[in-house]
Length: 178
Image (cartoon, rainbow, N blue to C red; front, side):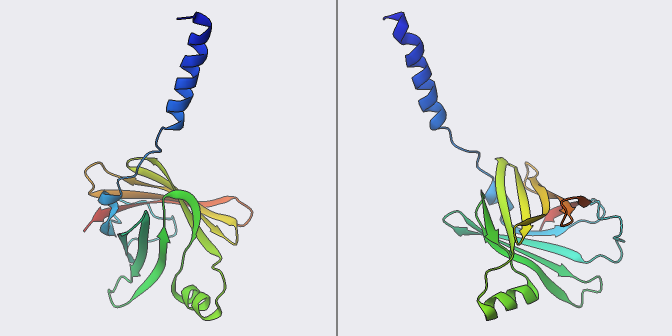
């Protein structure tokens, strides 16, 4: 074989193989189900007192075609009332998807306006995703969701930002699969 064609041929083959590389796939089957925060293992905001914080529950449902339904509910410490914190149908593709909750959901449904709050998820590896929250296009929060390899715990690290883009808090919530 002629050597002057060998290097360009190898480069071409390498580029074709790189172009066919698949992005990492998140273990969404391990995420599906119900999760409850364990406050003893978590590091809430400095202002939170564990006896006063609500129980937090997350529900993840695979809706098919790459869609996941995320629901987060808070139950007050007396276990007498609950409120919807967020519900969103998302794909883990880095695109922004609308999030809804309580009065905001009612407002969007009654007015027909576009939601102002969105979330985007990007897969880092089989057990880790990063997410970004925005309100009217302005960054309000970032974080990571990390699943344990046995699928029994999930750690959500959240960084909140003010409108000027300055980080205002960080909290680490550890959830256990129910």
